Image (cartoon, rainbow, N blue to C red; front, side, top):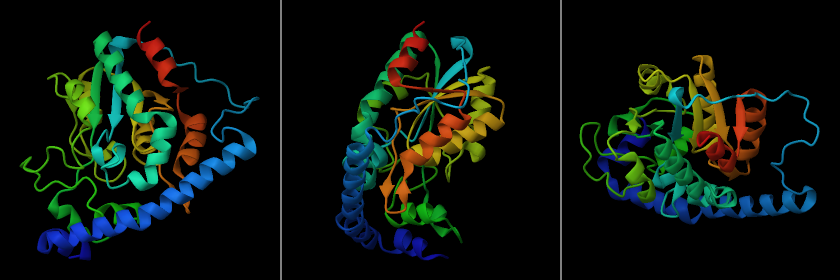
Length: 276
């Protein structure tokens, strides 16, 4: 068993100490880097995320058919979007800069008003997932700080208001009996959950994609859905990403969104198109 397993199963208090230590040190350092990075690039060259004035690529030209369109939101969960979440120190600046929390809620509201299909692709880790024999850098970090942890695959004990739970303001939309809550994805993409099946069974072939985080789960969902034959638009200010010494995740994502998404819209633009 890997060391994560011992943290999770044998010594819950040790996991808590690890989370608190990371929140005080690693995340605080990341926040400082993030703040400096945002300020530096913005002051030097305006908005670092602004589209080019003279783009070389043609527009995607995506035209919605709302009966065949779904709003898909990845990881609308406390650990990503709340100051109480374990990643706030590294994603908080980006979330606040883009108004991500409010924009996701606006998308939920607009989608429900039109009667569109809405689907959530959540991220959960169960105790046995901490026994994985290998993982990438971000996976190691997520396991270390107990991100998205649930006590059991077969029980929701301790789920309410935990880091794995949905943001409170989204619950009326998610828990209305109509929203599809897919089984959890386990790394970044939807290859191992039932999201694609759920969309196909609802005769969906267009997706408006939002959620967390931009260069990880959102981009992974975009790529897989494109490969599966869906037409996908990403809502650029209804996502955000970590900013670390390793790089600005949002900047990495927005570049790839421009290259490969069928549409790259603001929340305002998405709502206008959803309401047409």
